Length: 105
Image 1: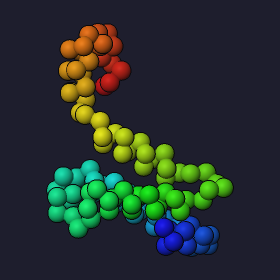
Image 2 (image 1 turned 120 degrees about the vertical axis):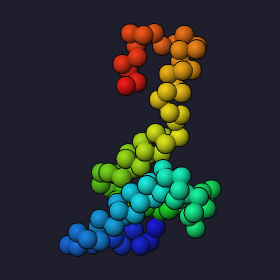
Image 3 (image 1 turned 90 degrees about the vertical axis):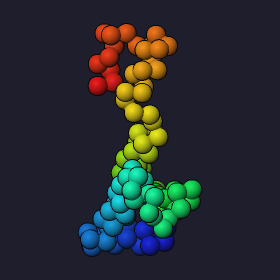
Image 4 (image 1 turned 180 degrees about the horizontal axis):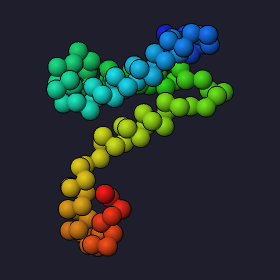
């Protein structure tokens, strides 16, 4: 977190200010790829979560938060079942008619 905070405070150095965003994208890519997660040295139960938490906590609290909405929506999207599974269960429970199918596509 301290390294990310230093990166964010370097106003004149765009390369450093972009590092937390690049690290966040890499973590998101790794948790979305089954091959990478399986062979990773980070523990799924702690390493990825703490990495993202450190990056997000270092984001400027008095300014707009750009990474937080992106990371949170990506994690939520990764936690949801696939579109085909969602449609199957919604149809089974009669919660989705044929006219409402466009909502999920």
